[in-house]
Image (cartoon, rainbow, N blue to C red; front, side):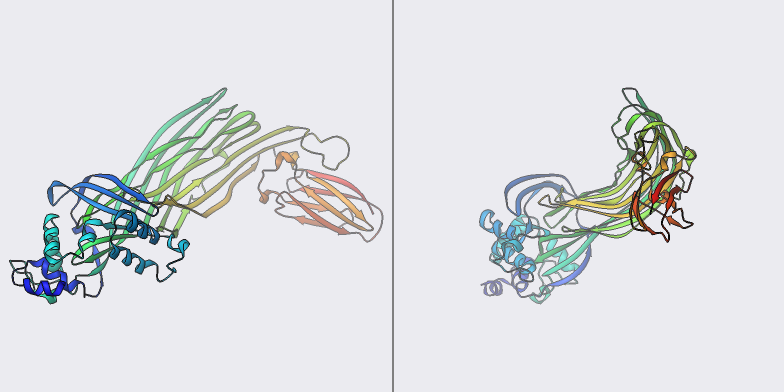
Length: 545
């Protein structure tokens, strides 16, 4: 019917009517386009008209650069093949759009009766209901719709951008429209570099606890966010947009000082500095009558985790900041992938940076977080990626006789201990959610190391181990373990030497809490077995074989 009607009307029909017949026969082509030429939009308001499993139907109103009057679009937001099927049954999505989505996503991977596969999330699909409803109209009806929605100039511009000759009356030969059915792969990039000095002091008090903190730092960050999407057009008019992925990139350096100090005699809950939440870019543009909305930010925060105590004491950390690194992530609706991520704190923690006076134990965890956050289509796709660095500081002081019995003879031993322990944990992290609020949460460890450990008791007698033996014939099994009051020390500091009492010795390196050893004696008799920490504290046990 299209071709016959069109041939009768060709000499008097405007540009749009000539496009209709040939578009149905044209082969889809892929073009690379940048979004900068699209009209900008603002004052966007949305209303949900209908919602079902796998889809929502919304009315979106907005103003755009190319019109002084308020515009509105009725759009389907679809995130599964089953959602497209449900939208046809429940909300009036055209069968042609449903079939296009099924052809694109279902026939390659799903049997059409496989509900689980059909419900699997796909790219976010946005369909202009008005255009989709009129694609099978007669040429006269379609032209009337195009004029009523102010799309005729868009089609003329589209054809001219493809090098087609458009007359003053807007008429072109029918053969000009073969290239107007298309799937355009498009993207836009947001970049921002900023230097952010930040200085602030805080005080936290709880009971007899009083903690002061200061940060005096400079944040130098270069960011880039790329959003990739595809535009499907028929008859020169976009009717469907699919969001493919978001790529987040940042390069950063942090310099300055971070100082925490005070007395602790009770728990203090975490407190943070929200350093900056710069907008990398937000706004929107319209692809024909499909509004595309985005918001990209880089929230930066620093602070201290919960401070825990046992007994009381004083604690502090003064950290010179000289941190640098970069990261790049790629997030789709299904997953986030780490493309690249580095972190370097340049090894600046020294014992002099730690303030301590503790009877019991105190812990705190300073942290810094930089996450590039992107929202597309008012949160239908949310991707957040970056680095999360924290530095647990633990100070332990102990004097007492309830920390175990070294050789199992008599009462528990009276021992003492004093340690400062600082670790560095840095994770590359990405999280987000999709249309259905299904969360993506991934973490990749970048740095996991002990940056400072000191025995401030020189040495701590509690490093003398707990040892027990079991003898069968001339063979002795020996178990060696840490006392409970020093169980938190890193394995790199758990180095011992076993003297078996017969002139033989054995090294234990990096014990990690405990170990078992076996030794065979060449002669029967009584032996004194001594296990000695590398700093001197030891435990001796009599063994008879």
